[in-house]
Figure 1: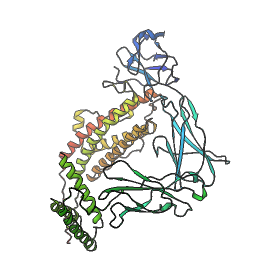
Figure 2 (figure 1 turned 45 degrees about the vertical axis):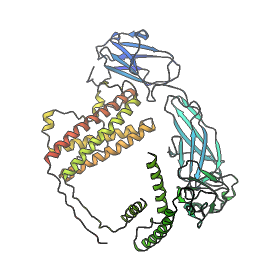
Figure 3 (figure 1 turned 180 degrees about the vertical axis):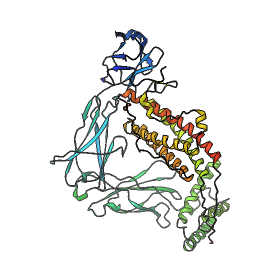
Figure 4 (figure 1 turned 120 degrees about the vertical axis):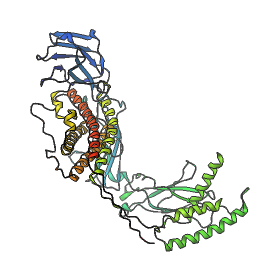
Length: 371
Length: 219
């Protein structure tokens, strides 16, 4: 193969880097530069590394060889199919990238949400066909209804591949028109226009300071308290909350739906001596009297708590062990109280941590015995 | 049984109290240490490049991702600095010249890679390229650090390499693919060569002087 070439290209292919619809046919020609001592019969073609049959060649001149390609499939890679003209010994003389595909489909399912009325994030899905074999560019555009100017979203991929984030300069109490344009080498497709008011798609942060604690000695209840999300505290709105909880070794969440506007709730009917994981989320509906439902926030980080263990013996429990447990526990509680007062950096130590450790111990005993 | 467990728990919890004397260590890195770090960085980049090149060449498609692919190096591809050099010439390089060659090469290669980053199609590739460029930037800075610690001036030069006259940027998409191929090849060759360059430098520069100062804070 040739390793060093003079300044001029050894050969020229036509068409150079064409764009074609799937199923179309193409005749390409390779013309060797006059500086090169090669003739049409010294050449051959490959497409994506595979040699094309000589039957599809035709010599159009002393140093020009053509190839006929029929019913082209979609490009093997988005960077284009590699059609290459070679000299007899395999050396590359010239190449052309073929872009074979379909025009884009209309993007669909545009959904948007605003975090605390400060910004707007939208996501969409490509049209049903999906695979166009060509690189497709998506542009999200928006404008205030009745005000002429189109704006283009700049920050893409913030919430997945097909998403865009508008960080500022959004007006409230005015409808926005939002749409997505998909374009590739073969054309453009525009989605349907979505109309919305920022206030109708508000979401917020999950509630902060979620605390789960026991209700005295009640073995089947836990009390959940939280704070309303601070970011929206200045705005008049009613919030709805939802709580979900599960036992430690289960993946089934139980949902408490009718929590309303309160910031506390008592869970009842729980199992004694069990560790529960609890999460809370918030929906800031009816901001400034908007009639639409808001958008639920993410769930808060799970908070763990355990219900008190039953004091009475339940078939098979060692009564002596139970007694020792209560005295030990009381002592431990006192110890932790003292530690908190006399050593800094220990605020995580407490009877709760001990409870969680006990559950862990139970679990690891169980798995050890199972072996 | 239970009591042993509780004892372990308490020990673990207590160990987090600020009761232990704190150790304050400070080391002074000699040039020897920086050379070692630079060497390690070239090996890491070599490893990263293998994955990046594999993905990128698959994106370019066959024949670019075929193992024995060897396209012509056209005049325009000469813009990318070549790592291959005569063996005696390489042996005879002064430390300064050796370091400067590396510094200049990677600065130029980084520029070309960044251009690639802007034009590439898939999100996965862009992400990998961005990561690689960040690491390569780290290598350039590391080499600069070694040169400074040895008292050598950093090679001057324009931030973006000027195109040599008579060799325009790739005029069609296929030629651009070939340029990309050779860029990755040269990067690979340079990383192999740099490992040898820094190995050689390691032997010539005295080992680092490391001092540890311990301060114990009473409880």
